[in-house]
Amino acid sequence: MKILVVSPFVPFPPKFGGAQRIFHLLSHWSKRHEIDLVAHPLGEPEAEVRAGLEGIIQGLHLVAPKRGAKPWSQVRALIGRRPWQYYRHYDPALQAVLDGLPRDRYDLVVVEFSQTLYHRVGHLAKTVVLDAHNVESTLLERSLRHRPDWQKPMARREAARFRADEKRLLNTVDGVLVTSGTDGEQIAALAPGRPLQVVPNGIEPADWPRRAGARTGQTILFVGSLDYLPNRDAALRLATAIFPRVQKRLPGARVQIVGATPPPDVAKLGEQPGVSVHASVPEVRPFYDGADVFACPLRSGSGTRLKLLEAAAAELPIVATPIAAEGLDLIPGEHLRSARTDAAFASALVECLTAREAASRRAEAARELVFHRYGWARAARSADEFFQRICSKAPFADPSPKTPMGALP
Image (tube, rainbow, N blue to C red; front, side):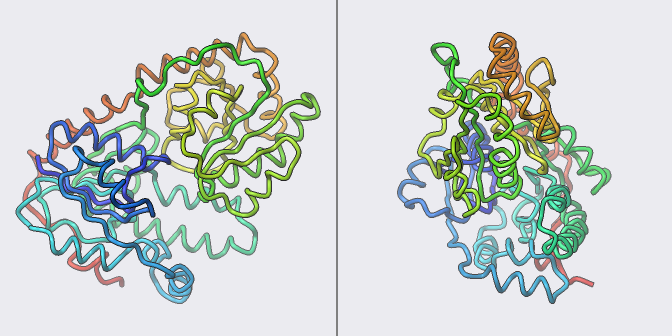
């Protein structure tokens, strides 16, 4: 098949979860299909991006992102009827590129993230599929409780508005890829009857050889894009509410927070004794190898966490909140330790750093599970089978509105 992929960002280099999912799925799909990509660049040199996608992408259309639009878009969302997600994600320049593509070239359009569906794509193929990395309205709703009080009224309004939009957007596509059964249930509630396929996030087994030697230190690791609200909240919670409890029992313990673009309050955590913040590292694997336990104290979010799959692949003991492990087959007590409160989370971290044998058994079991169930090749085959089924059944139609999101009432 000839497939057009439309993404809010180019997935190379694959340094964060969304880019990893897109890059690895495209890498496997390209073995059977011809793929074009329309996306915004992320600031990497274009020559490096094109070289990194050579052999995967046939036609690469990079569209310079809108600049300096955030404050104005927030004002427009405040006084207008559309959610901020529309003003933030809809780009007339990207739409112009899509409108200029040949209408008889593609068998399938795959759109990454719900918000990208604000762009009109249905004229380009008989079948349009959404790759839903998260249930975006759920993510917005869950983040409400962790925002400052002064932000909550507008954030609540934004979540409600986008939930209405997401329902409408989901009903413009012929099918949806979801990362877990949990997300599938939430999507089905928003768009009953829409065909769904679970395509889990994964790892490339060859990238995760066994680490040599036992873990004997007291290093706690957290990894994530730090400008993403759930990760920012988790990093702050770990350093300021959980880690001090660990330090009282294990004075030699330390925390490493690793991730791109930390906001000032997260960057400042590096001034705290025992805490270090590493921004935009070229390679995260050495941090997994050098740590002794992985902490994931997320209190909001959606989709599934690639960081947990990576920690499991690295055979690193894991402590996570239930929401962090949501949608994954990692069982508390068997593959990881689960904790909700700050005190329980700190106690679980201490246990992993002192009861080494039990922690190692859980880590080994988690690695075996992830290698068995969460490979990118298996995920890509699942998506490909869905594409074949849905393309063979879909009648010709332009499911997208003639203008982005149509005319709002």
